[in-house]
Length: 382
Image 1: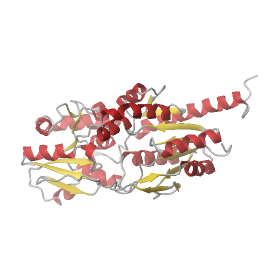
Image 2: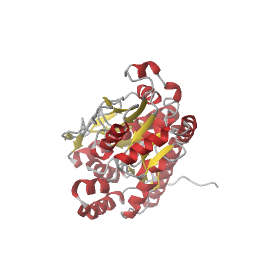
Image 3: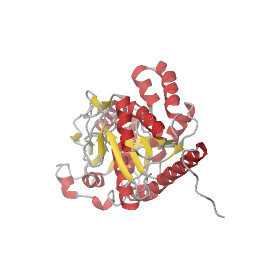
Image 4: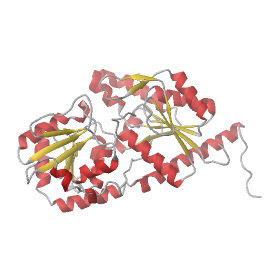
């Protein structure tokens, strides 16, 4: 570490593209916070580079992924990280870059952290069947057990990693900028541009259009409900929603514009059952929106009867009934409770928690290095 500068953090992830969601927003929020509140340096490594202080990792296009690239050449990626000479490397995916991060951290004798943003076991089972669970658990255990710090955004994801045999996992929730995502962003002129009927009930979804998001359930639910319900889906991906009561728009990557859209809707809906956290749900709640979301995984930890409805019945009828039930309740009370819940996750609360974990990790690493003879411990008081 340069004595005249703060620590150097390198974030690496394949989950970075023009259309990527939660992981990108987490890393961007971290960068902004570090710049405003610390003397830390920050570099992002990804196969797609479209921002300052980024380094390109070797990668090939991932078909039908709306811009993602798959990292290749583990050794080359590790060498790029070694040249950066960071004090801490955080891996944001469980693939090639995670192993490259471990290789670089080991050769540099620096700290390594992993943030588990995706449920790899669930994804494998959905794709290949139940037989895939056991080998994937073994892979997860082999990978994450090598990191100095493993973070999970929800208790369900933390427990999943522990059940896989990862020895120690810390729950670290994500956050939201409650000044950007705020009820005052409501824009009735924008809403009027949708040409909705005067008493329309506008539901909004924001995120990737992918099978695990189960947008088909939301489309079917809105079709069953009929007038006055309309679903606005913001996003991109291989499985875009469709239907007579569905409006599709490209995802708003500008946070302020996204906040205008969210605050101008009547409720937020999300049927995904593989979410490790649910950042878009948190952003919607910060805008004062009641939420109707799956009761499974990370979404079920954010949403309850105070802020909306956590849907237990996972079919179109279950979501239709939940949507109707939500609109039968006191919207002002739900909106106020949603906003209050989101304020607990403001980045101004969440980032100091994360930084505390980083500093403790760096402190432990310095002690380990001193014991192994790589650098002297500072002298204690006389």
